[in-house]
Length: 286
Ligand code: C2E
Ligand code: MG
Ligand code: MG
Ligand code: MG
Image 1: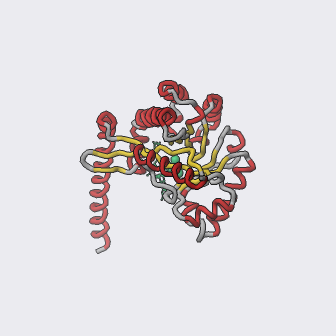
Image 2: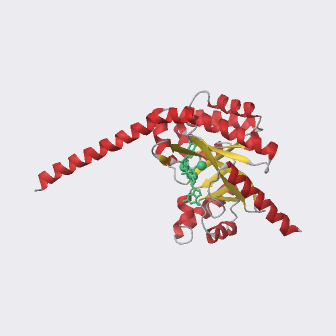
Image 3: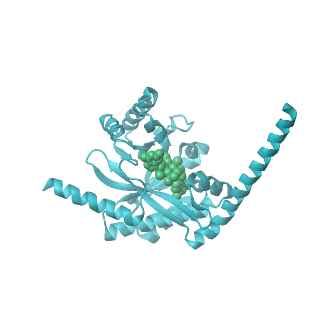
């Protein structure tokens, strides 16, 4: 009967929950050791300037190969690290590694590339966040104009006054500031004019249906127009097809990132990618 099966399904549910909680705990506990063991590493996804077809930047994306469980996607482990607080250490490692890698590209090629690094809210809210960024820059020798921080809307509006102060400090150092996943937050748009931002990154959920859903097309066009009137660059993420690219190009979007250009690449594969593009464009002009 209903009552009994209700109880059974509750038991089943509870067991599932426990298994899930246990797995989460296991992941969470193995992160510090994973960082020591070198199980975390970065991949780099190129960003294309639509005006001149050049690749001038990459986004650093964190990867975790768990020794027993294999690859764990960031959408699973980042929220856990945010809850436990380990994201502070992990995020610092990401920033230092990204800055060091970017400085190495400037020295040895393939080309000087700006690097965009994702920042979690709890990381940004640490009192010494700005110092940490400044140390990552100075110890890598990277000039600040090669670093961009990707922040989220919710991070900026949770403590507006404090956020504004930090952003002004970062901006005065010469670092670029972008809003990631733009359009998915609950923020009022008023904050855009107060914060010293450089770039809006249109969330990939809009780009995904840009050709089939008139609402997503309208939102994308509105973000581009608004960004430009606020003197911001606009980049689209999650571009997977040529048709999406043409749509964005036609609407005046400045840059794009997505599988259509390249998936996130290892350091080695990025070098191959950049070198091959440079060779192609040299061929075109000769
Ligand atoms: P995000 O910052 O919005 O990064 C873009 C995500 O979209 C990446 O997923 C990327 O691999 C994926 N992507 C790129 N091009 C395409 C495409 O054409 N189609 C589709 N469907 N997806 C595409 P990834 O690497 O799994 O990262 C997921 C999220 O995890 C990131 O979203 C970011 O919020 C977070 N994350 C990754 N690395 C870090 C990090 O170092 N620190 C922090 N705090 N968060 C990170
Ligand atoms: Mg990002
Ligand atoms: Mg995003
Ligand atoms: Mg995101």
